[in-house]
Length: 410
Ligand SMILES: [Zn+2]
Image 1 (cartoon, rainbow, N blue to C red):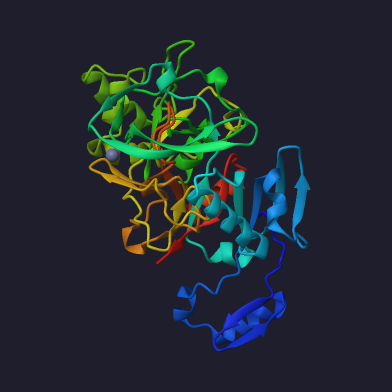
Image 2: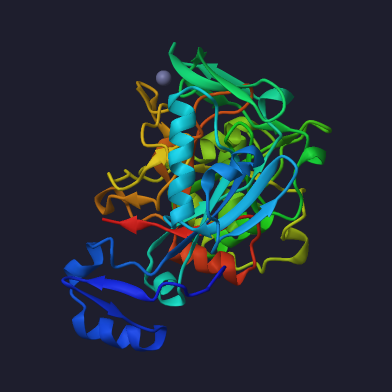
């Protein structure tokens, strides 16, 4: 668990303000706990901290920075604090002013981290996995995509004009919800990040290690399907699942052989992941209790796989907010078309989803996309959400490559 610094000593209980320390807190909560209480947003122990890289020339405009950590560099000042502290609010006002007067932006980068208590993690049911990007895209190595719709969206783009200066201008770009991957993902394995068990390509696809696939098989994790990928160096498909070491696996191979397909063909995997083959696949995976070998853990690229989500997409609730910055109340990136919905550039609040949309799967994704619009090889993507069972198994097996946040279910 990251963080764990307890600065929240105040909890508002209508109509009084009570002050607790951490130890007596749970006792008091136990006495007053009521189901309705959970839905109150003030009943929150989670702590949100921020780091903003403000352009240094704006720093004098912010006034007193006592109480915040400020590290001044040549171009940017790195400011840290707790979300909604007075300096955070002033940075937001400055940002809104600069944008509304088209003078540019106040900061170059921002990050908000949410820290949870052990109790909060124990009580959570779903976890958002923030997965790192690798700047490799399937498109640049010949992965095939099919365009399904013709859709354009107007966006505002920052144009760098030298020094720490920017200009904002509008332009039309094609919507990227209209494309569908056809055939295997093709990438250069030598360009990939090592020592991670889950990461995202620039085009939005999820890549997982052999260890991750193995863990999912051993724990009978639901909601996902794994597809082999191609290393452009040798043009061979990887082999995320083993068939020859079980009777059911051999049966699958034999049925496939009648159809003239084998695990070396892409068609085999499309067929295997069809609804019809699911009972047989589940039977094959069930008795396999293979230990996760060292060679399969982080770092091995031999049998990387593409993870695709099959579970019911999670619908977000009104409480989930998206934008380009934590202060973005207008979210100009919102886009809805036949291909789906782009909710915005980034999630700027805790993720809140409708419980009724969760089908109980371990591997899930949001119905909405984030990432803004397609920019070059970059494509918007759906957020990855996992069940507590999978989350705990990932921690137990020391899977690497993600930060987690607790998902609110309402
Ligand atoms: Zn569109």
